Image (tube, rainbow, N blue to C red; front, side, top):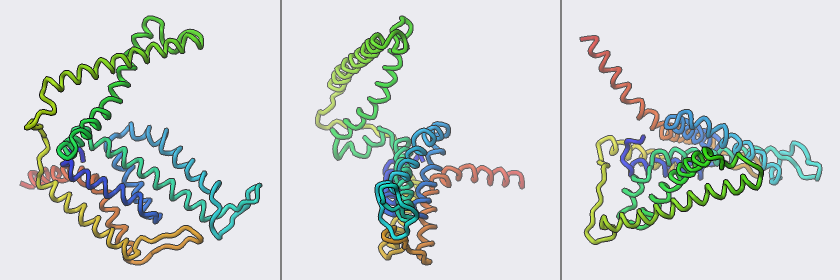
Length: 294
């Protein structure tokens, strides 16, 4: 996925994130969540597991529980709260659907940030909005650099006994402010150096060109065509109520043959990065089998 052309990758994530936002059919939500988690684990492995356990799982639970506590719509009453408000099946299912939608969107954006690096965003939007592209690139680059510098300063201060874990509460606060002050000073000095370097390299002068390492290949054409066809089929099917689903006042949705066909197309689109990553291994296995037969 990371080797795709930025245009193809951007359109893919735009389609999947848009579908996760728009379609509230439970099967569609399940496909979005499964595809997002699978891609995130494929890209980040151990870091993805920590992100799921520490952020996504609590987010899913809290969001699913919060909706029936505040929303009491629905015709299927299961119980009553002490204040007299009803607990309905529809509000519970809608809370689960909302939680699934939110978690899947966050997971898709997590994969998006891993694939669409700052250089790809600058390549995509540099010509249309060069100032915005530069600002976005520098912002995305600043946060991890600032974090690493603060950790480095904290480690140095720890060596001289000025860490935030040493001393009483007042001393810890002073140590923390000192670490923050050193890091902010470094950031300001680095901003001045960056500005001087950009001016020396001719930034903003007319006729200045930019180098890009991205080249459009036949695989990008196939991926783009696949994304456009699948997205077109899903949008057209949804326009004919193929993915219609309502939670209020009662559970009611589409379960027709068109619906199941759209589920298949959506699943194929969500699983495309995994299939694309597995394709080289399949070709290698076929080549080895062919050599053995010879």
